[in-house]
Image 1 (tube, rainbow, N blue to C red):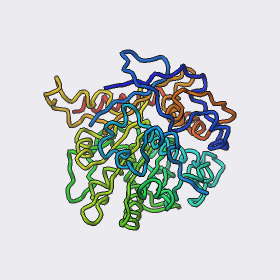
Image 2 (cartoon, one colour; image 1 turned 90 degrees about the vertical axis):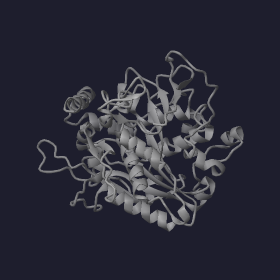
Image 3 (cartoon, rainbow, N blue to C red; image 1 turned 135 degrees about the vertical axis):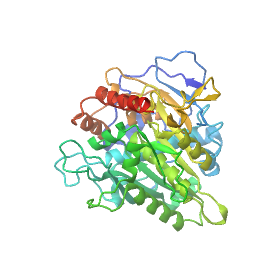
Amino acid sequence: MAVHLPMSQPSPGLCAKPPLQQRGSASTTAAVAAVAAPPSTFAPQTTRLSAPSIAVNVRHTAPVVVLPDRAAKKKSGETLAGMWREIQGSHDWAGLVEPLHPLLRAEIVRYGELVAATYKAFDLDAGSKRYLNCKYGKARMLEAVGMAGAGYAVTRYIYAAPDIALPGAAGPCPSRWIGYVAVASDDAARQLGRRDIVVSFRGTVTGSEWVANMMSSLEPARFDPADARPDVKVESGFLSVYTSDDATCRFTCGSCRNQLLSEVTRLINKYKHEEISITLAGHSMGSSLALLLGYDLAELGLNRVGNGNTVPITVYSFAGPRVGNTGFKNRCDELGVKVLRVVNVNDPITKLPGIFLNENSRVLGGRLELPWSCACYAHVGVELALDFFKARDPACVHDLEAYLGLLKCPKIAKVKKDGEDPISKAKKFVLQQNFDTWRWRMAAIQVGELVQAMGM
């Protein structure tokens, strides 16, 4: 089911972003509409609109916290503290995505901004001693990227590296900064209605991460040693990034997985006598890591606290690819891992892996299960689909700031671009690597999937 929200004709600056120093400034605020501005009336469309649109596809497949503005609260007559469980997907966002609820819209943007912070803090200066790591210390990272009022305290940085050796390299690639864990402050917890534990992941930047993205073969996750569940399979490249250990990392020890499980468990135990939520958010490859972590926590039962209570786990996925097979999707549903996928229908990454083998090719006539269904990739959760494209900048379709800009301002207010923002810089860095162009990367992924299909 797809419902489109008509919008005015976009300006040429759809994918243009303000410079970093203007984030949160009065000029930037004036340039875009309020984050939680409610959408206009939804109307079903039979053809794709030429203007950008938002669609909803429902598939059960002074620090001050940045919360929805007063207009949103007045419009809905509800507060986030009073309905946070519904906003976090306790009922699979039923009645909140069609039309898009202003509180949900604001929360999507808020978590998207926490993901964008990973790009802004990522050091792409080859001459820096922190090259390909975070530029700032934990205590000042959010403030340094213009989010001093986010209402969260960063408690740990996370590092990861796939167990992959690039051509000409002496050995496996070293660990790089991939994201952070943060927890809501006391003031923020009162406004949110609970103590929110956030894990935020950036997307693909380095060459080894691109190679991991191309490893489209499925592999059993086997996260629970007491119950391996060989039918639950995930993409081998994402699994490698999540589980590989780099003993030479000077910032931390242990795999990305061990770092995350240790820190999230510590925070759950610290706040176990409060209302807690676990929110995992990421862009592109980062959304895959967020979903793997969500499944891992639930499968191991680490989100279960005293008195039989379960801490809700919610994943906000921005421009995320498929992560696992139908067994993985079904198990996530069984465990109650809630996933809201924000995708651009023109973004090829959201259709990968699984170009040939996916949730649409596992059954015949909607009833007959085909023999290769266990090897089919499947998306997890509920999809919120955007629709935008810029011919002069095709990579815009995967750009996180373009996603957030459309959600913040459905009317597509023009924003002047005075300088190169960190996300565009990261995109340029990726394109300068030795893996040729976007077209060759997409071709490599497709060939890998074709080999997988032929080898069944």
